[in-house]
Length: 283
Image (cartoon, rainbow, N blue to C red; front, side, top):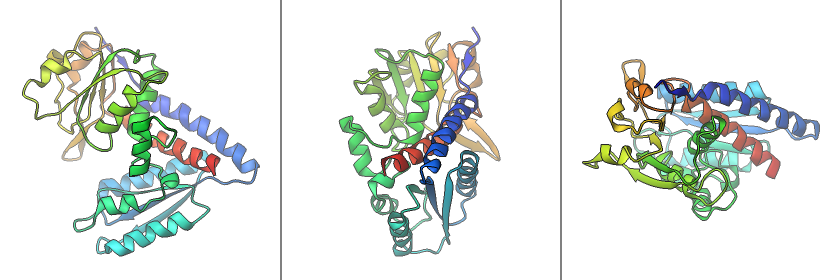
């Protein structure tokens, strides 16, 4: 068996085209969608990721705003930047790029973001909305994974999804999203992690497996049910090379699989644009 590739680049391009069309309609009505980023310090991956977000904004016609604080910034200076973005009517949604430098409190920074301007969907009020199944911005990576599965007609409703990883940005919100009683979700979800001694036994039960542990090659071919959909959402680094949580050999067993590059990452960025647009439409 050779798995169908879940091409995030292709699906993200379609999402960006949809966002560009809706953004242009808003602009014709006198509303310019605005997205902001607050970057603290000089973490290279974070800076690169922020730059890509602003490039995406330019591509779809969204105005972008950025504030770059030095690594020596105090907690008060970070929260003051958040307050400025909260108060700026031209910025409909924004994010504080994490991780923050040592000594700064990420939780306090996230709590300071106005919930309706939370483009990442990770502000506690919005996570509460997700728990309740209420409308609100969805966390970008979980929303992107779901969009990718739907784009390739991977059955989700009533299926068993195994999520490896319980992190705030992917594992926990993805499990909540997939379990919601709504069209396209309504799955049976099991959340496991690398501390589970019989991890492979759980993974073999999954019709869909999402690996979000940040452990290179964690999921191997012998752990996967033949024909399952396998999504590599966690990454790690070997020098300058990005490694997936999913071993390449899984492609010979799975029915669908994300590539090492161009799978979940582009979808996360596309959902960020969609969330910013939705914030502008709500306003």
